[in-house]
Image (cartoon, rainbow, N blue to C red; front, side, top):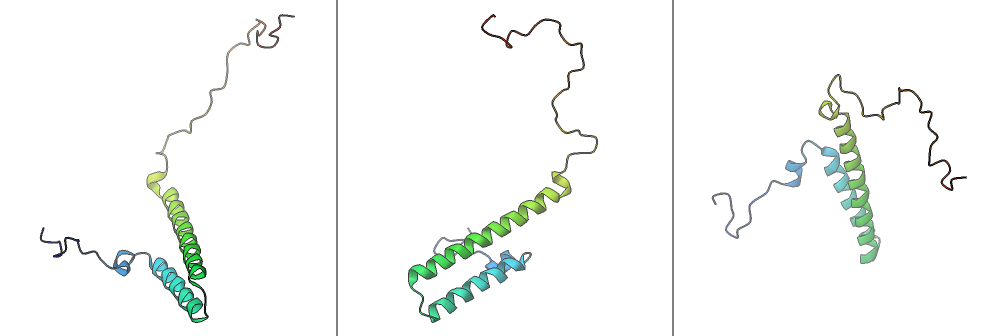
Length: 109
């Protein structure tokens, strides 16, 4: 328990350290914070600021997850190995049956 602080909580790296390889995340968070401060300075109500924050975070999450998903799809690890074929329905290559299908006319007429 050497890494725990006296109150039992493990210290964590700052957000800047954790997102060092994604500076666009930190930049977007700063923009959201700037927008909130500007709205408060202009007399926005708490519920208006809350809605701004929710919308900003939702949009940030949508863009980030969408971008990361695209990056993941384009990575070589997500591609099928060479020589692998896509699954497809088998095409019938045999002789057509001369027996009349029962499903064509269920009434028996």
